[in-house]
Every structure is written in structure tokens, then in C-alpha cells.
Image (cartoon, rainbow, N blue to C red; front, side):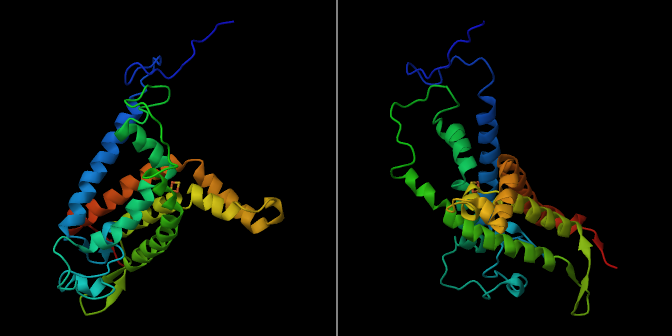
Length: 268
Ligand code: FES
């Protein structure tokens, strides 16, 4: 019988490994994908403009707590941005900490960006550029346990984004009222809610929340069904994570750059 060489961590030099496959491809793709998103999201968060077109509100700016001009203030929850607010604070800064915190502390993303950005380790059985291992049971990474609380906020925001889709069905009729219609932007925002729903509702913390604690899940049929649903989404959590990340970025791009010129509206 053929004996496979044992794959072991080596401590001689960083990135040393006996692996012969292209192990570096996945961390590189994560680095480029997440890096691109972070750069774009940072630009948009601090831009503070072009986030509302007709009934379409960019998900980066939802919920819109404060408006920044006469148009956006009509969609805001609490009126105009207060004068005392520092200039760097845009409506997105006020709310984006929640979805970003949710992603940053996600179990999947943690494993992905620890490898891609911190080389901790670069990949399985690849030597890392440090000696000690502190894990997540001491400061600062113990803070990642806050994920379950971000989950609660993310579920609320998911509901708000669904309401944004409803609002994206009602267009200005030119007479001071609204009329029902479906635009490309409506479909884009609806797709965003579906993909974010698949990601959020497949969360490991939610799985524990609906199916954990009790000993016999079979004795709690409703919770068992909920657990099965979350588990079903959870099986492809990585896929949902990337699809929803790309689509939320695309939704913002749509509202920011494309909607004014390319949106077609169907009104019965
Ligand atoms: S574990 Fe990924 S969203 Fe909760």
C-alpha cells in the first residue's frame, strides 16, 4: 500500500509546506475580493451623496436616518442631518457599522481573512510567520464573540431592506402622487434582500439560537424545522457570503452610477 508523506506544520521558515497544490490561490482570491470591497465601501461611505435615485435607496445607506438635502430628507427617518454632526459623519457611517461588524465577525469570514490578510496561517499545513498561537480566547480576538449580537441587528436591517424593496415599487406619477411599477432597480434591490437573507439566515449563531440548548430537538417540531432550514442555508454559507457581498456592492453601484441613465420602469 502506498504511504502518503505526512503533511506537517514546519517552523523553519514562513510559508514552508509539503503541499504541492495551488494552496495560495484561495487566500489570494479572498484578499483581492475583500480588499476591493473594502476600498469601494470606504469610498462610498464617506462620499455621502448619490445614494438615492427615485424610490431606490442604496443598501449602504439603509436605513436612512438623516437626509443630506431637500430630496433625500423626504426619505429619512429623522429629518436633516444635524448641524453639529462632524463633516466626516455621513448617513452611511451612522449605520454601516452594523452590517460590516456582522460580516467581520462571521465565522466563515474570520477563517478566510485570517488566512488572506494575516497569514494566520496562510493555509492548512502551511507554516506561518509567527511562533505563538493565541487563538480567539484572549483579547483582542475574543471580541469576535460579539457576533451573535450583530446577528440580531442584521436581522432587523434585513427587514428594513425588504421594506426598501416595497418602497422601490412606487414611483412618482408626476402629479404629486405615486404609481405602482417595477424597475430594474426594484429587481436589483429584491435580489439583494434574497441573497442577504440566504447569508444571514444561514448564520452559525442563528443555528445555535434556534436549535441549541434543548437536549431533544425531535420533541420541539417547530424548532426542529427552523433548525433544518437554517442548517440547509448554513451548508453553503461561504457561497451565500460571497454572493450577497458582491450583490450588495452591485446594488450600490447600480444606484450610484447606473440608475439615472439606464433604469427602465414598467408601470401597468
Ligand atoms: S457565522 Fe457567518 S453570518 Fe454568522
